[in-house]
Length: 570
Image 1 (cartoon, one colour):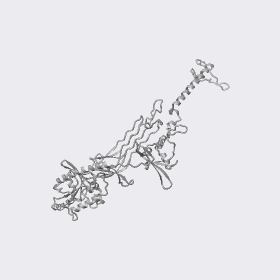
Image 2: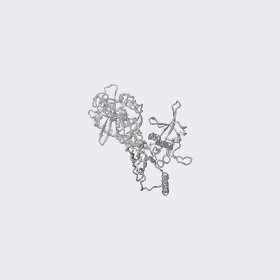
Image 3: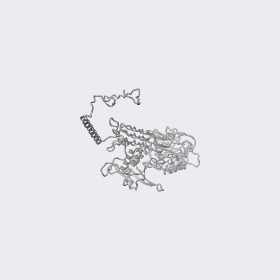
Image 4: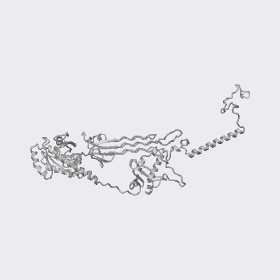
């Protein structure tokens, strides 16, 4: 198996956020001394980073599933959970990230371009980690002093992406199979490609670093092209992508070929036709020079053969008429390699300056277009900016069943953070949606009580029957303040000791206790004055267990019963 892979499908998943904690501080005489639940930790993200030391996508073929660490749950005593570590994946410079399209279980095809890692150090967050849930300490406010719930952590992003490597080199060597491209890159650099005397010896692109004085540049050896390569013949379609990022295209022409149907000029025109057809389907990045406009260099190879030398001298004027620089070389004897090396270095230096100037001008001319906002469901963000928070659509299945779908970053995130087993948490979600304006917008779209409402789409969507209620914070007609929807089950216990008393209740209970004590003292004083009390120092009832001096003695009977069957006390 080859150790070079230039396209691979990867499944990435960000770490899940940790759940918040719903802890309550316990103190002496204060069974509910306030919330102290900490926040959950944030999940780690999967990040792709262009690295010069990475040369292939082979690692992703053996390990196509990559997952970042999840955050941990919050703890009591307001201790936040730890954040999950980011997973940084090094990829070769020139890697393009595509959205993977296709049904589950079938081969994926590249979709929209997500990122283009053209320079060393470029990064792209392929799957963001989920946010950690807030603990009840962070959810407490003036009206909700001790929340009995916490928010759940958000799941991390999960999706399939396609990584495609487009080698970044200064010079691309193109030509027919066995034209001597691998021999040329081996003679000019330290690269050691496989060289043999049969077509399509080069199955993978080879990169070589060439030194010309103080100038250094790279050469890419692309597998041989044949007529029809742009339509998928041979290996050309698979590896033509590796010349998209090159600055100079060098035609390596075999002047010693024994094929009677081929000659240097026909080879050149055939290759240019394939490059032109392939360039029509390319979507080059901003600032890049189109392939037809890139400079060409003609390299007439194998002049060590006498017949090839004569043919090179014969066709050289024809190429010069096309304003193309021509160099006659021999990879076997190294003839003409020095002149070719310094000529390519000079041309690469000029092209680098031109590309840098084009990229700078494109950045200056780039215009940021902001879409117009529609009225409704908006909020103020700053002075004049408006951001749409959610969208509501009425959908049906064509059989009389309909529902309302609510989509938006905030509503969908709030639903994922809600623990639907906790009634107070569900009430808190209803308050947030009402404050955002979802209920008012549903009414405007014609929703009625009992209609089905879905928040989100896909597997994470939550469906429920809509039950419009009074918004949180409203007041009754008599001025009584309404609490938030939802209830804390800890405050609904029958045992009053588990409920925190208000100041008015404490004051009332204190006065009731003092009044009861005064009533008891008055009654005891009246009984003492009336002589109802006996002298406590006289033990007049030795069988009374409750008396101060009582011994609780048990009555004893005679062993023999009387004539009537009764027993007499001793």
